[in-house]
Every structure is written in structure tokens, then in C-alpha cells.
Amino acid sequence: MDYERLAEILFPEHLESPEYYETIYPLRDLPEGAKVTRLGPSPTGFIHLGNLYGAFVDERLAHQSGGVFFLRIEDTDDKRQVEGAVETIINSLRFFSINFDEGAGIDGDTGDYGDYTQSKRGPIYRAFAKRLVAEGKAYPCFLTEEEIAEIREKQQELKVNPGIYGKWAHSRELTLEEIHKKVNMGEEFVIRLKSDGDLSKPEDQIRRISVKDAIRGELSMPENDQDVVILKKTGIPTYHFAHVIDDHLMRTTHVVRGAEWLPSLPIHVELFEKLGWEPPIYCHTAQLMKLDEEGNKRKLSKRLDPELSLDYYRREGYHPKAVREYLLTILNSNFEEWRIANPDADVDEFQFTLEKMSNSGALFDLNKLNDVSKEVLLKVPASEIYDFLRAWADEFRPDDQAVQTMLADRAYMERVLDIGRNAERNPRKDHIFARQMMENLTYFFDETFEITDPMPEEVVNAGDVKVILEKYLATYDHSDDNETWFNKIREITDELGYAVKPKDYKKHPEDYKGHVGHVSTVIRVALMGRQQSPDVWEIQQILGEDRVRARLEGYLRALDR
Ligand code: GLU
Image (tube, rainbow, N blue to C red; front, side, top):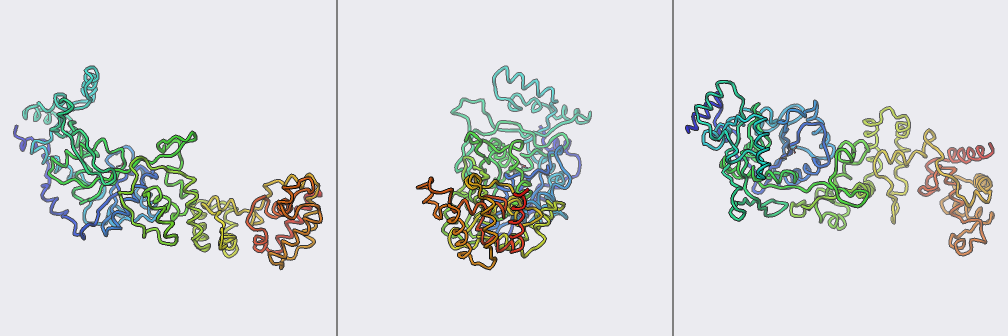
């Protein structure tokens, strides 16, 4: 067949030559070893943890090596696009310190390798599809949906692999005249790769491809035999074709993508081969998994796990540093060890490597994230946490009176945030994420103060709540230092028949009504509304004398009612 002629029939419009594109997108002038990576999200508006996880790998690879990290919008699936999605992608990732050097942007593209939006690259894909047709490596296929369904049925009956390949690829047989006629009649067609693969041979004669995956090592898989669609009826490329063309012309060196793409790797390898190009280095990342209630690993699901959405972390108010630090713990198995050895180092000093990535499923665990967050926030100064809370509240709680009131007095809030954090040994680590912090700190503010916990049973049974609070109030001196203050509590404890040392009470419970801990819990509940809190003396110093007295008096008044 005259393939050149066929190509002209199928692509009559003016197209640039593949060589033209090779020249306008030259090899990048980068230092030896510099990596070029890209993120290729679909603009569906839903950005998930997997995107961030992958983006993080891309970003580290590029920026640790002096390379380039770019954003390409993969909008060939025209059904699922959402207005403003590009902006959301860029902003969400920027929040987690993932910044692109090049590519699609809110105000248009930057960089010399664009367009960076696949829907704008139509002529490029067509130019290369035309070349493949002209070389007899691709062909038009006129099969209708119904015909394809029939083929599938027959294949099922015969128990052979499904798909359009080999003798099932009926359009391969068409003559130039037949094709010309169909095209003239306006029949729709797709362009398919004419695969050289053959999987119908005996098992031991099947050719295999081998790819060195930078995360998974040597991969060996049966070659592709499917005549996959490269251009759809609409002229839009499939993922397979767009990936190969774009990553070649944009000079991507490392393709980081999810393990769900592994099965189509043989297709990509054949496409690169047919186009005469060197494939990039593939890095197939592990699926994000979580432990379910029964302790079984399962994939994170959009329906079941709100924490899969990146939005979740912003709404809850996780500090980006915490998320970044946590991601590294699941990305690189040696990160935690490094962190122990370098407790104060900037997280970006850690040398991220593909070799230390797990390939068997990365376990995502919110509790672990919370633990990491506690550690990370401990090192963030109160003034910075305040700024963070302020920004969170303005974005997510602008009309929440309670939250806004709590943040009204910056100096006061900073002292609140700092309680117990500066202790030499065992500093307090109760800050995790913004919503939790705000809920945790309500008792520092009259507008949000509430009694949520009961008084300790031992004291209630002895009928001593009132007398403890009266005595405490009577001896309260705001200028007492911590020790003098606590001695006064000891005195009350002793006077009323409670053990000053908890262990005495544990040894001889019959000799006491309770111990000093129960007595101070009474004060905690009256002052803070809760049985647990940081150091009472320190809290009182922040609350101020008036508030302390008012709360104790208030509690006593309520008792009398
Ligand atoms: N658009 C593809 C996706 O959303 C990107 C895969 C890739 O990175 O190659 O999954």
C-alpha cells in the first residue's frame, strides 16, 4: 500500500513536519544529571493525596538535581473538566511548597516547551500520527462500537484475549481505495497503532520487553500486541499517545506516575520504539494504602476516605510543613532515621532518593500524620502558628464568631499557644491542626469557655467540691510563684483529709477521701471546664487574676442554685 498517500488522505490539512517540532523543542540545556519531571493532572477539580505524593517526588527529583519541574494539563478526557481546576491545582500544591518552574499557569503558560495543555496540542499529535501512518506503523480503523462489541463476544466464546489485534484488526485489511471511499463518504475513523507484537505464540516464544524502573528495578513483561487507539474519532489523542509525544517533545527525563499505569507500559514502549525515540526513565510509585478497622491494607478510596482529598488537609488546618514532613516519612524509608540524627535541619536538606521508595504500597496513616504534626509544630514559633491560624480562620471560618474572637487579641493568643512548649524536658505537644487547636483552646476565652467535664467522683462523694473551691479562692494570691501556689493546694488537701502524696492514697485508700490530684482536678474543672489541662499555675497567669476569680466565683454560685 502507498502509505504516504494514505497519510495524505487521512490528514489533508496543512501540518508541520515532525522534524519541525524536534527543532523548536530542542534538547534542554541543563547540567549533567539534571532531571526534568512533570505533573500531568486531569483538570477534574479533585486533587488528591496521590497527586501531592507524586508531585512531591517530581519536585524533589527536579530541584535536588538543578533540573526543571513543569505542569502539564491532561485534559484529553473532555467529559470531566471543571472550571477553575488549573487554579485549584496550582494553589493547592503551592500551599504545600510544591512550585513549578514551567508549564501551565493561572495567567497562561511559562516556558519554551508549550503549549502545556493537551487540548491545545492537536496539530502536534496529528503531525506525528500522520508520520506513523506514512511509515505504515499506524492505520485508520472504521470499526463501529457494535462491531467491536461483536468481536469481543466472539473472543469470549473462543477464550482468547480481548481487543483489536492481529486477525481481529479488520481495518488492517482495507485497501487504499476502500479507505479513500469510506473517508469520502464521511465515515468516522480512529487511528490505531499497527502493533508488531504477537501474544498468540506458545508462552516460551512470546517476546518480552524489559524496562528499568527507577523505583521497582528491572521489569519484564510480555510485549504489546494491541492495536491501541492513538487518535480518537474526534482527533483527540489517547493518554498513551499524548504521554509519548509530550514527554518526548518536552524532554522529560523522569516520568513519575502511579502503579495503575504499569499494565500499559508495553504499549508505551512500542510507541517509543515506532517513533524512534528513547523512552524516559519510568518511576512507578506505589499505591497509597491505609489500614482499615480490621487492620487490613486497602487502597484509599475517594468515597470512603475524606483524607484522600487534598482539600481535607487545608480545611482541617494541617500545617504544610507537617504534611511535607509526613509525606517524606512514607516516601523514603530512611527519612525518620535522618530526622533523628538531624532534629533541627530543614526538611529540604534531606537527600530524597528513588531507591528508598517502597514499591509495595505506601501506608498512609492519619494518626502517624498527627504525631508528626505535633513534633513539627513544636518547632514552629507561636507567632508563626498565630499567622497560620489567622489565615486558616479567614479562609475557612470567616463567619465563625468563636474562632474570630479567639484570634482577636494576638498577644494573648500567642501566650496561649506557647503554654508548656518551652519546657526543657517533655515539652507539651498538643497542637496538631488548626481546627483541633481552636477547639482545644476554647477555655482561654470567656466567650467560648464551657464546663465540659464532671468533677472527680471521689470529691463529689465526699461532698467537698464547694469547700475546696471556697478555700482555694480565699487563699488565692495571683502573685504566688508556682511553688507557693502548689503548697497552698497541699495544705487544703491535707486539711480536708486527702492524701498529699497520691501513692499514700493508693497504698491505704481507706485512710483518705482521695488525693492531691483529685483536689486539683476540682480546680481545673472550675477554671477550665475540663479534667485535663496543662499546668494550672501557668494557665492562671495567662487567664489573669480577674478571670480566675470570676470563674471560681461563678462555679460556686452555680453550686448554690
Ligand atoms: N493524566 C494522568 C492521570 O491523571 C497522568 C499520568 C501521568 O503522570 O503520566 O493519571
